Length: 340
Image (cartoon, rainbow, N blue to C red):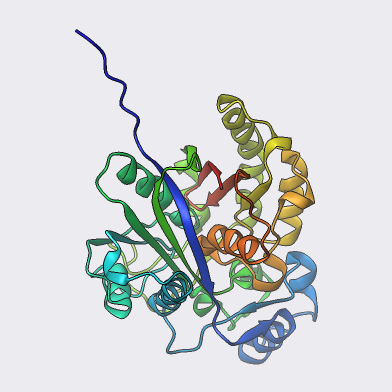
């Protein structure tokens, strides 16, 4: 019996866009509001000193996850002259959602007028990278040809300003890194040698309670006094101990080395942690698109935002290798290698 070689199509990031809310919230302004609302005197400059974040974009009361995601999608449609009805599948991939039910993807779809199947995919700050992995598989197997991945984060709404003491300030500190943004990514089949080459993911779920937003689910149904809980030091140590070797093994398996990578898009929580991670992994500053100092930790929007900014600067060239690195509460790590 003769054998037939079947070449499966590869998916490609065809276009990317982003959208920020208009309001800027500096770290100094945030410190002043914490001191005023909670009564705990926050030392001026301490947030920027620890995080390296000068300011972030912050959504107003009437701006939601879907609002920012839809704005990024509309911008993408306009820039690329894309008919919303040509989209085969819409995936909303964010750490946060508008409501528990139905999927926020339905709200986004209603705003941007797509007429396709939709679903949410949630894995904290790794939501986009997981959605990219799922979208790639769906395109490779021929189920869809044009997939829109939308992300909208309004995490600044969870920032706690009513702090009573130093321990309270420390417990809520992770929230002071947050910033808001929306992104949109068009994933299509590739016929030019470009596209997603390989992905790999891992999890250490024993640390699931090291970063969580405990409210609205069956374990924590009460949303009164809802706040983000995070242990930044535990997460930092976990990612530093697992991340570099995981990435190194991934590159070895794909017969690629760090100098071959032109662009590294990595989830960014604070500037000092980004600097340490880059150094530990052996990346160069030129490979990194640093965003955290001026937009904060934008959760699942961070990687597509960095891709979009590089494209906007015309730094992405055909044939360039891109490494995307996601790190998320749970905890989980994901890496994806792609060619522009």
